[in-house]
Amino acid sequence: MNLFAFDDAACAELAERQGTPAFAYSRAAAEAQVHRLRAVLPARVRLAYAVKANPLPNLLRTFGTMGLSFDCASLGELNRVKELDLPEGRTFFAGPGKRREELELARALGVRIQAEGWEDLLRLNELASKPVAVNLRVHPAQGVEESNRIIGGVGPSAFGVDAEQVPELLLRAQALAHVRIRGLHVFTASNQREAGRLLATYAMVLDLAQGLTESQGLDLQQIDLGGGLGVPYAPDEPELDLEALGRGLGELLDAHPWFQGEVILEPGRFLAAPCGVYLARVVRIKESRGTRFAIL
Image (cartoon, rainbow, N blue to C red; front, side, top):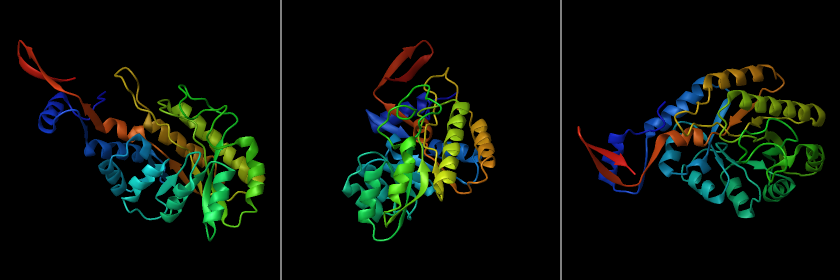
């Protein structure tokens, strides 16, 4: 398994030509990773690149020209995506503690807001002059725990509304004149390389969404399953089985015919990690067969 986008010779040539330290990225590798993922997923799954993984403008532009959407979590990320001049609906904005200026920019850009709680809903209602569709981020009370917890998982969290509090929040939201909850966002995994664990999480999210739809009368256009698609960091670490992931997600959607909307996935490192390399400095190591380059 090749973990790098450039071989030693290419790294040496880049370091000599560009100088060090430097970062180098392969557009071909980035595009190939998108194609690999898209090839196995059901047609109604939309990919929203998590900008936090790598906000390099040229990388964002590459993903934008391929039709990807974008997941932003800060004002800086929104401004990076703003430069792409995307049509409305191609960007999502998530994260706790959203400031008014961030929400104002997001609204001006036609960004789909992932509301973290009542404060987000209230501010959006104040900013909007007509009804606006938003997604509500829900933190599940139970489910499939991460093998190495980073941002998702179950238990206490700063992200989203606790599942047991959602019915009461939905009732309060009915009084808001300009906010319509039309999607759910549940993010419970990070750098997960086990397809079965990811699929168990997706099953939990779909069951949660079905329960809220039936009990609260939600009209869901989108279900955002978050990110968490992992990559290996060492040769002995297995890759995520994409075929199993895509096949399993298709079976889950078939098992939930009540939902005919759009599914969102937010890959970040899965798309960005395999396409770049950091060049520190180049030294020449003399060997019996000649001279070779090493990147240190």
